Length: 229
Image (cartoon, rainbow, N blue to C red; front, side, top):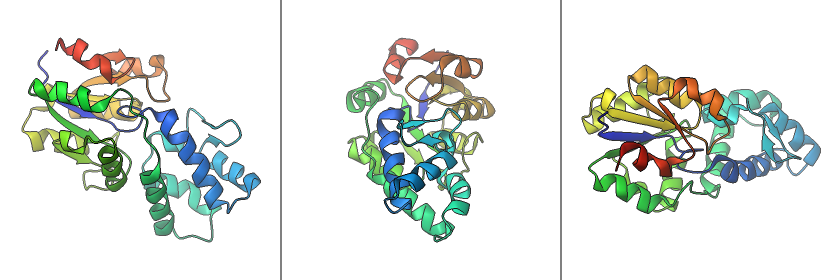
């Protein structure tokens, strides 16, 4: 196995999903409901979030969906806002969400780069909040490529972002590893002809990810060992 580049999903992969996005969902639903907790709980259920338990349902649109897909589900329940306004609010709130690194990202990424690996991020989040999150963690400059669902390459599970990364760093897709916490990430990797690495720092269990992955790891910190670095 020869891997020359690694493409990471963001939420649930570089950053722990539950620690980051459960607080975000609660704050967003309460804001949309203008402080009405009953209404906020109803809006939470629309997107698959249990406001009272503070947990996502396994099939929540928020876990792997794009901002546009989330807004399509929410819009009928927020008639006072246009879809563009909802997307703007969603992206703003997302950019403010405190990120919990899955492992200390600076040393981890420096180790990979020190072995000559090209690195990228492909997320179904929008690109602007993704850059805010990576910048907040002090690691944006470690990546050769950062793409969101609005960057012009499509969204996962389509392979567009992945193939754009391979072309950008001039590495054949079969020598790229796609790392993610959802089947969207792994299906995109398979469609692009890449190796697929599943991590368990998102919401999906190992048995759901394993059929689509070359390897299932607890977290990204195990990647150097998998590669023998």
